Image (tube, rainbow, N blue to C red; front, side):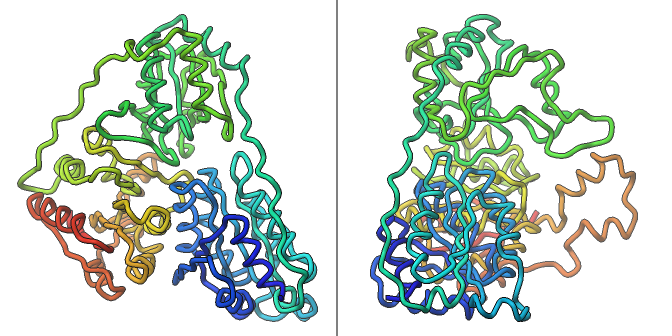
Length: 515
């Protein structure tokens, strides 16, 4: 058994049985080992950003890490943007990165680079295996790191000779660390705050608090105390739809967020961060909470927030009968022109039971939350790190993790072009992903940011940096070229029909919404 085979066998034995991959020469012994070891599903991506984003999506749904296989420093570098998003989402991933043979590195061949230096900003755990006999133990340590609490990104660098030389065998993965519970003192402090102040208190949630059960507990607490419950602007996964507690998120736009937060005297954080602006803007605050508002942390990432909410509800005497009725938007299939409102209604009507929605709709999707709260129960995934090109890969990984669930990927035309290769992987694996591309032919988010930072009125050259209409991108043709059936729609009626057909059919589909 060589080092590569010992690593593959260790991964499978450790519960890491999916590998999103884009290999090169240095990884060929790992590729060969895949033929000799049963139990590892390999999913090929045509770009490393697809590979790393898919691993993020897989973890968010499966809650166990997948591995990636990347080629040397440049391959890892190509995947770093979506590893950044995964890190912000607390997704566990085991990266396997090839390296030159140990004796070859000194010659400074063209692909030689500081792989550990590239890996460290996005990885909590980094190690280079020194020899073949160390590979399996290093792999087991990487799995343990990825499965830790909170989950982490672990990057194992595998020099080529450690892959082809003889190894000892597989290594056992250390027992998973117990998930930290929560601080009883922090819960009591939160209860003390929430007993007074009523609507002047905000319970701000993210992470595991946004499961269906966590939201139900928050709804009882809100009914008992009168506090407001909100989510962060962006969240790794949120349970939504009929029968689930509808909460708003803090708006992205500062001018919208400030009036919503201005009257709060206390904010209780449940895994969430202190509300801050996404960017700095001239003459606008970085902190969004009002002056004098106190912040109280009840749980951090990795802690058992659902158990903490149960304890908080108990301390407050909050019960299911305290829940106040919710008023949901009435859903009707829209007709006529495509507008942000009609698009939102069409999507809300079309979301099937137990769907996964991956949202990178950015400006088009800012009004999607109220109507989709009345849709069938589903999970909603968002971009935690802000690096665009997030949603097609994450949708790919989510579909691999849950083949029996329909995945709806919503993405702007500009963002989609970063990782459009994900469509090819979806076709190859016959994944149940419906990709909706909002084609407004402009980086609309940047047009708004241009005004937001006070840069003045854009001239011709500035406008050219913001528009993507020369030439116009034909997304239906792009999808067809990668094996995904697609169609373009220009009216709400056409969109309704396209959604119904795409969701009813197995395998991937693309809808270009021409706005």
